[in-house]
Length: 123
Image (cartoon, rainbow, N blue to C red; front, side, top):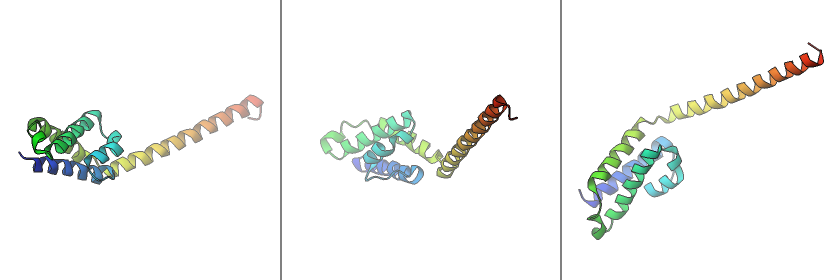
């Protein structure tokens, strides 16, 4: 494996992050900085290993120090996770969460209002 495929791996993961997580940025490093919190800890660590390998692969002297096996495993971990992420499902979950929060607030206020009315003797 040469430096070019490592960079291609990093570009592929960056593209998946942009497509699935809607994270904007110039490269994998910037996308990790902006949207790394959207990834699980294990996947974020794998993406950082891949980013480090891609940076080191650009320099011929440092390329020899890159652990090819760990970069390949990191790439597999990132791609496996990002292919499983569904943007529409994430949006639906966010809308349902907001709706549940609003419904609970309305219910709590109604119960509190009825309690105060009962306590004051109006009900």
